[in-house]
Each structure stands twice: as structure tokens, then as C-alpha cells.
Length: 300
Image (cartoon, rainbow, N blue to C red):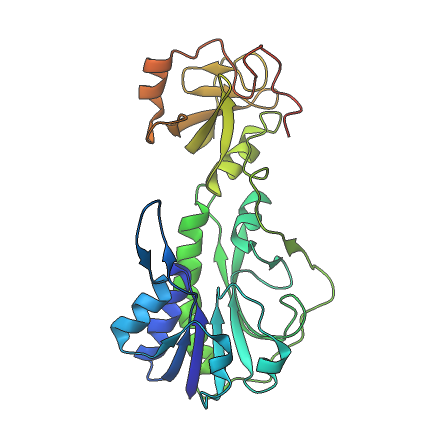
């Protein structure tokens, strides 16, 4: 089958390489434009573009080039742009979506699954349609969600499983697909900075889920403080009040405690939480309190 492939981030690379390995003719790869990946860095390609160049595939950042590429089908994985109807009218497309549709339609299905405490998620091969992730589903596979897995780790696993699913779905041509059920629809809205802010009024298991999606933060002594790894623990003595610090333990909702493993204070590199405690000596203080000593409750 002659294909176009549309994608940009690392999660899209396994599907591209799997399609090539399976013998599909990938006639064109469409990816985002080169951009700077860090302060002062030179412009560089997206992970998908870099993989395509290594595979010897033609690459463009112009979506409209798909129309004249003479392909039978477009395969979309985390492309990040809306595909106009004018393009879909010429080139039908399928998308690899990182959830079990219709649950978690939208931009952040992995993070929302973790925040919701879902025990199972998965991947779907679905038609690209006008609505937000509303197309018919051709194939799906479930993936369990470990209660310690991070969003980055789960995304990588879904990308691996999804690559195999896409190859299998295209083997011998797509089936007719099945409409998504009208019930069970949820939306995975884009994750904001406020979503990543730690709310010490929540139970520790919920606070840990925020840490697991990445970019979690709170404040300490009036400055932003990142928590990169942590887990809920059972202890005999719970620090007094939400956000209260006792060594690497932090009080959450009544009776629950989050234990910090890796942190990043403002202006510092990531570090072991015990090393931070030994230097900062924060016992008796609270996360989320302003320098005047106000309570962290109601911070979100």
C-alpha cells in the first residue's frame, strides 16, 4: 500500500519504522518544521523527520503536498495539526490514538488516563473525520496502567504497541471500521500549568498522579519548586497540615503522605530529595505557603 505518514514527536517514530519494515511504500512523510529545541540551540528536525531522513524517505512540512503525492492512505500519529476536509476528500487517513475510544478524545489522553486513575488504557486505529477523534475504529488493543508508570513511560509503551497494531490493521487492507459508541465519551483536554500544580488538599495517591504526568510543581519559600518523582507511603506519624514537610515526607489529605524522591528547587538542577532536605532543612515548613506563612489550602 502506498502511504503518506504524518507525525512529529518521538511517539510517532515506532509506527513509521514499523510500516517501512513491513514493506509499505511510504511515499511521503509530513512533519513539523525544524525548530530550536533549547535556549541558544540551532534549529533541528523533529524526531519523525530525523527518522525519515535516516530511512531515505522524502520529507516535507507542507501538509498540502499530500494531495499530489499519489498515495492510497495517510497514516497519522501525533501530527499535532487539524487536517482540513479538502485534504481528507482526496486522501483518506487513519490515526493512531492513544486511548480506548470514545474515552479520552482529544490532546492529552495519556495524562488524563493517569490523572483519572484508569487501570487500563490502550490504542486505537481510527478514521480521521471532521469531529474530534470521532471516526470509526478499525482496531484496538488494551494496555494496563501500572500505578507507578509515568506519562512518558506509558506513552512509549503505547507507541510500541500501537506500531504493531497499525501494521496489523493495514495488513491486507483496512476493514470497514466500527462506529464509536455514543456512551462513555470523555475529553482529554490539553494539560495546563495549573493541572500540574500540586494540590496538597488531595489524597497522596492523587498528588502522586500529578507528579507522574510530568512537570509537577508547587512553591517553597515563595519560589517555584518542581517534584520530579514521588510516591504515596504509609507512615505512623503524619506531618501536621496539608503541605507540611517532615524530611522527605509531605502531608496531603488527612492521614495520607507523599514521599519525595527527586526534586528540583528554583534555579537548581534536579537532585535527590534527601540531599535537598539535608541542605534546605525544611522541617516545620510547608509547600504552597507564601513567605508570610499563609496556609496552602485553596491554592488551586
